[in-house]
Length: 592
Image (cartoon, rainbow, N blue to C red; front, side, top):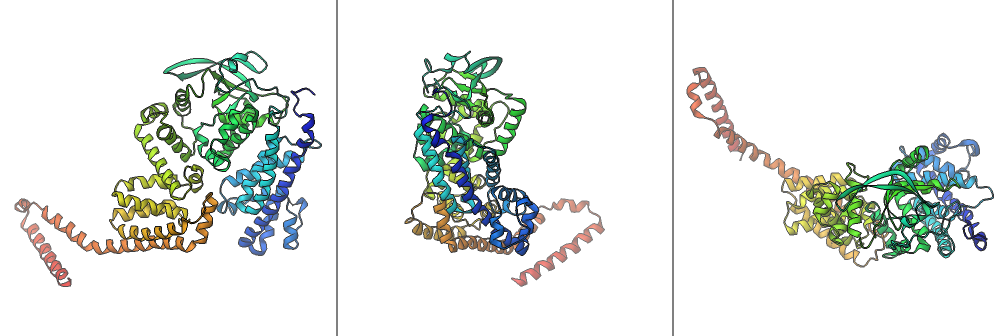
C-alpha cells in the first residue's frame, strides 16, 4: 500500500473503532445530561418541568407525558443539547460556566457528523477532540460520568500516540510526510521547497517589521500539514499550564519537537485556541469559508506559526470537511526559535499589539505572558515590551504587578505556577482593584489584606468579588479596617492549620476542602458584614464632630471688614442669627 494513503492497512481495524469510542462517550454523556436537566427543571418548574422540555426540544421522538424515569430515558443527546442551549438564559446560564454552552454546541456538530458517517469511520483527531469536549462538559454536571469518558479519551489518545510513527497525521486526505525539521533552517527550511505542490508562491506581499526595519515579504500558500502551532503564544499560556500540570512540565513542547507526534501536539493546541474563544473561531471560520483567508499570517521557516493561529485553526477545521488540500497563506521568515528567540517575541508582540489593534486576550493570559517574558525568562525589558506593544511603561508594570499577585495567590493555595487555576477563579478584576489598596498599607497590613482576599476566594466565600473588594476599600478609606484584618488573621490561621495536611492536586481538591469547611466560609463572610456595620456606626458617631468642625471653619472664614458695608437692617438680621446660633451651641453643650 502506498505510504501516502490516509489509513495504513495494518491499522485499519484500530482506526475503525474511533466512531465506537465516540458513540460510547455520547451514551455516557446523555445519561448524565438528561439526569441533570431533569433535576434542575423540576427544582424550578416542579410538576410542569416536562412542559418546558416539550417547549424547547424536538418533540417528534419523545412522549407527551409519562413516568419521570421514562421521560428522561426518551431524551437523546441532540435534545439534551437543544434544551441547555435554548434555556441557557432562563436556567442553565446561572448554573454552568459559559464554556459549557460552547462545548454543547460543538458536540451537536460532532453528533451530526457521526449520524451521517454511514460505513465510514471518524478520523482519530476528531474522535479525540470529541471525547475531550464530552469530558469537559460532563465534569461540570456529573464528575463520575466524566471519569468514564476520560477512560475512553485516554484509550483513543494512546492509540494515536502508538501510531504516530506510521502516519503524518493528515486529516481526510492523503498526506506525504513533512520535510520540515524544527530549527534546521538549511535542509529543513520551508523556503527550500517553495514552488512545489506543498508551498506555492503568490503575487501578494505583506509588510513585516523585524530588526527595526519594515519591508515587504512575499506571501506563500503552505499546505497545512507542514505547519505547527507556536507554544510560546501568550494567548494560551494558562491552557498550557493546565495541560502540563496533568502531563508533566515540558510535555507539550516535547510533542512539538518530535515531528512524529506533532499532529497530536497540533490537536492539543487547537483545542486550547477553540476553548479560549469558540465564538470567535466560529465567526472567523464562517468568513474564511465564504470569502477565503484575507489576512496572511507569519510563519518561521521550520513551520512554526507565530501569527495567524486562529486563521490556521479555522483552516484545519475546514480541512476536515473536504478531500481537497487547503493552504495557509503566510509570510515565511528565515528565523530560528532558539537563536532568534528575543527577536521572534518582539516580532510577535509587534504584530499582535502594535498595528493599532488589541487582540482579544484573556487578561490573565496576557498578564502571565508579560510576566514570563520580562520577569521569569528576562527575555525582554519593560521598555522593550512597551515599545513593541505600543503601550505606556506604567501599563506594562501594572500588568506585571497583577501577575505577581496571581503568582502569590497560587502559592497560597499550594498550586504554584498553575495559572489556569487563576483563570478558573476569575480573579483578574479582583486583583486589579486590590492594587491601589495595597499601596495605602504598611508591609504587615499588605500581607493581612492578601491573606484575607486569597482565603475568601479559595473558600468560595464571595458571592460578588467586585462588591467585596469595594467594601474593603470603604473600610480602608474610613480607617476602620484594622479590626477586620485582625479577625481575618485568626481565620487565616485556622484555615492554614487544616489546609497543611490536605493533598492539593487541582482546583477540585480546593473546592472539596472549601465544601468540607463551609462553616469557615460563612464566618469569613460574616466577619466582613460585622466590620461594615461597625464602620457605619463609627462614621455616624463622628458626624456631630465633623459637622461642628465644618461650622467652625465656615465661621472662622467670615471677613468682619464686610460688616461696615452692611445696612442697619442687614446687621440686625445677622445679630439675630448669631443669637440663635449661640442658643443652639448652648443647647448642644448641655447635651454633652
